[in-house]
Amino acid sequence: MTRAPARSVIAALGLVAAITLGGCAAEASSGTPVPTDRVDMPRSYRFAPDAITVPAGTTVTWTNNDQFTHSVQLPEAEAPNMVVKPGETAEHTFEAPGTYSYVCRFHPNDMTGTVVVTAD
Image (cartoon, rainbow, N blue to C red; front, side, top):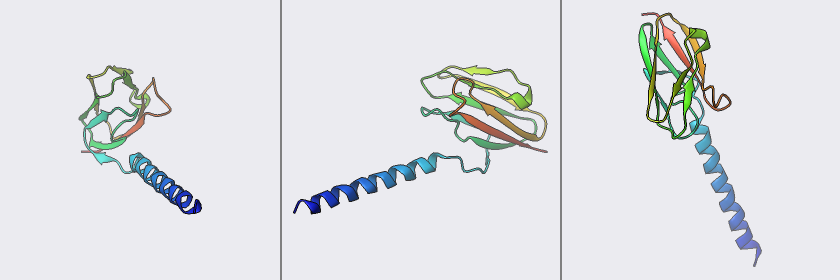
């Protein structure tokens, strides 16, 4: 009789694990850039969305909605490292078409992103 409850517990744990892993997969990058000029830094050490696309000449705004300071470092754009404290924003105008990767200098293993700039 003790086996039935043990099986129920194992089944329940399996269901919880499946739901948890499914939720994590939803947080991952879709790989497809989203057409927007706004990127959020939510309370999760990530850029959301992490891949965007904009036409040349667009100013992109990053908003820090986290409780920790982050940065936006755009090496390909030869832009200065922008430090963004909680509640602050940073902006950069992308003049030339291309693919620009960026990273949070403070959390480079977790926070990376891409801006795809298209010709007008």
